[in-house]
Structures are given as structure tokens and as C-alpha cells.
Length: 167
Image 1 (cartoon, rainbow, N blue to C red):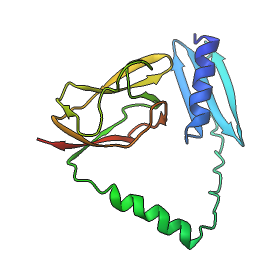
Image 2 (spheres, one colour):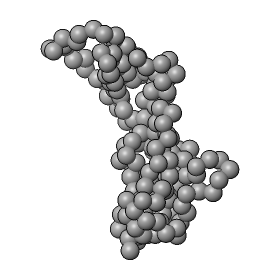
Image 3 (cartoon, rainbow, N blue to C red):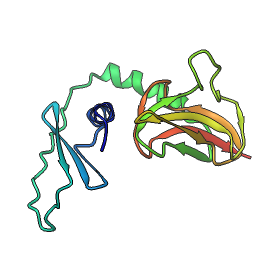
């Protein structure tokens, strides 16, 4: 059974992410979370058999909000994008949802910076999920040419974190 603190962490991660529904099953216990408006809804079922043909609740999808953008703003936002067109061969992506940390602790230097040389087994960052700290390795040898995330930022599964120019 999950502890209250672990459930709170799950609620926080689901609330901060773009997913609308999350289900966790372990040892006959099921925890289901669905976003309903702005507040997540949590339902926990302990040691009960779930019918094989249970009705499925429709999931409401929020309509994206459309905002007007002035021409001046778009011109300014396009300039940094042109500058960030760096040459790279590989993107290091997040293998999970969690909070990204660039350094092993707040007092330490970052694992990598722009221009850092990395090997396949070099640790480039840490992603924390449910109080577990997972070291993320480069997976390729090369040079970090762009860092796409900030320290302490919530990252999604598959989100690009670093761009690497391979050797």
C-alpha cells in the first residue's frame, strides 16, 4: 500500500503534468487519479476484484485557450529560436516524469555545461520521481551543445533535455 506522502507526491506530479488520468496498481491495490477541472480527483480501491467489463467514464478534454499575440511579440520570440539552431546529432530525453536537477546537490557544480565532453556512461542530470533520484546518462559520446531545461524544472516522459554533437 502506498503511504500518504507517496500519494501526495503522485497527486502533485499529476497536477503539474499534462496528463488527465493516472492509474497505479500494486499488490491488489489500485489508485486512480483523474483531473476534474483544476482539482485532481483521487480514488483508491484496496484488495477488491475489478470486474473485467467495467464501464469506462468519458474523459473531458479541456479546449486549449487561444491568446492573441501581437506582431511585435512574435518578432521577438522568433529571434531567440534562430539563435538556438545549433548543430547536433542526438537529443538526450527524459525517461520519466519528474523534477530535473542539473547538479548532484545545490552546492555542487552542474554535471554538464554547454561545451562539456560526455561519454556514453557520463551522468548528465538527475530526475527525481516519487523521492527516487534517477541518474540520467548521456548514452552517446560527444559534446553538449545545448541545454534545453532549467534546474528544478518538471520534465515529461520523452522531453528533450540536452542536445549532443556526437564524435
